[in-house]
Each structure stands twice: as structure tokens, then as C-alpha cells.
Image 1 (cartoon, rainbow, N blue to C red):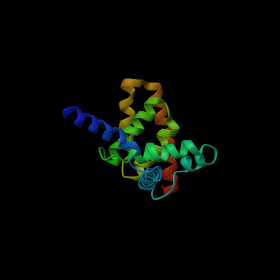
Image 2: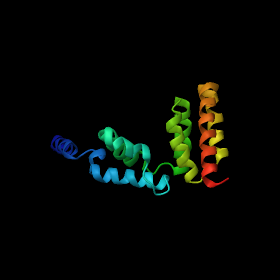
Image 3: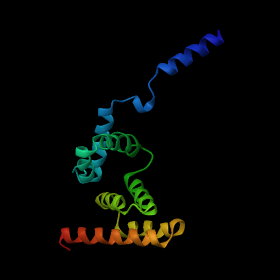
Image 4: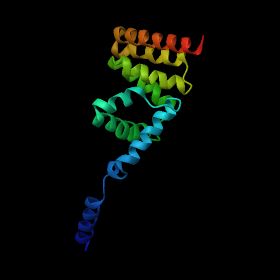
Length: 151
């Protein structure tokens, strides 16, 4: 009888869709779009929208998986998630993506000083050249946002 129960349990597990397939791609993409709107003052994300024309699969994967599945997880609040993303992108030398996430961070109330601290932190594991490149990209972002705000 135990073998029968084990066999039935295995059959049920095999027949059950995995968690990533538990919701439709459309539902996952919708969650991703909600994440973007929450971080980007209700607006679409220009880089993602530009990808839709030339790289639709990449745009869909970004929206459904990266945003809909990963960024919408409940484990971190948006401030922590954005500070982590800024630090990681800066450490990788991906200053363009770091600027995107720094902009989101500022949109949701992270201060310029907090973003600066994230950059200071990366000098330890990745060194000064990447931290300096990140600081220059952030300084440009800060200046652009101040100019747009009239100050």
C-alpha cells in the first residue's frame, strides 16, 4: 500500500505545473507592469518599451520573469530592493542600468545620501574604478533631476 501511495504522490507531483507556470504569462507580465508603474511614477519604462520593437522576447521575459516573478516577491520592500539593485549594478560596472534603478529609488523616497552610501560600500569588494564610474553616473542623474525640478 505504501508503494501505491508513493506512486500516486509522484504522479500527482509530475502532473502539477511548476510554480513558474502556475500563472499565465499574461498574469506574470501584468504583475511586472504593476512593478514598473509603482517604481516609475505611474509611467512605462522607456528602455523596456524600446526593447519591445526590436527584441520582443527579451522585453516579455524581462516583464514577466524579472519583474513579474522576481521583483514582485514579498521578501524585500521596494527601498531595500532598489538599494541592492543599485549596489549590484554599480559593482558589475553596469552604470546605465544602475541609473535606471537609482531613478526608481529616488522616485520611491530613497535619498541621494543613501544612494551615495551604496556606492561607497562597493569600494570594498570591487574597488575604486567601478565606484568612481558609478559616482559619476549618479552625479549626472542627480544634476538632471535637480534641473528638471527647477532647483
